[in-house]
Image (tube, rainbow, N blue to C red; front, side):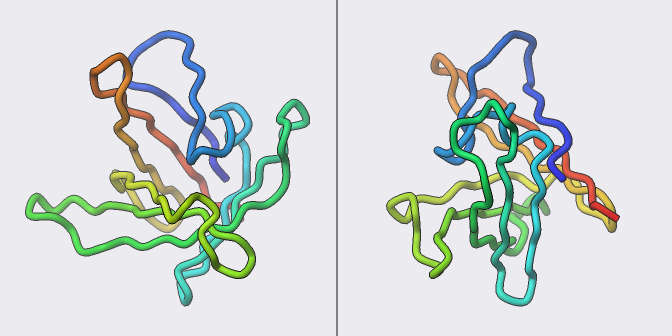
Length: 125
């Protein structure tokens, strides 16, 4: 599950992730990764969120860059595996991955400066 979303600075921010839902709506959602076809689903299920339910995605983890850093590429798709976001995808940096936890970061721009969003996931047993 996506247990925590944090930012590289203090403050209150209205963040929409993946052109879909707020950070608050995604926190606590369940993510399922299907490695044999690089697809998965995540849920938005907070009662205060306007659009709830499961979303489909395609993911890849390409070879690391010259510094040894892995990226996590994420693209929203529908049940027929077609893009739902005009073929747009998102690149995150895979900071940590083991048998029970995964952390990725996404750097976006806020007022012309880099703004880092960190997402911490824990495997549901």
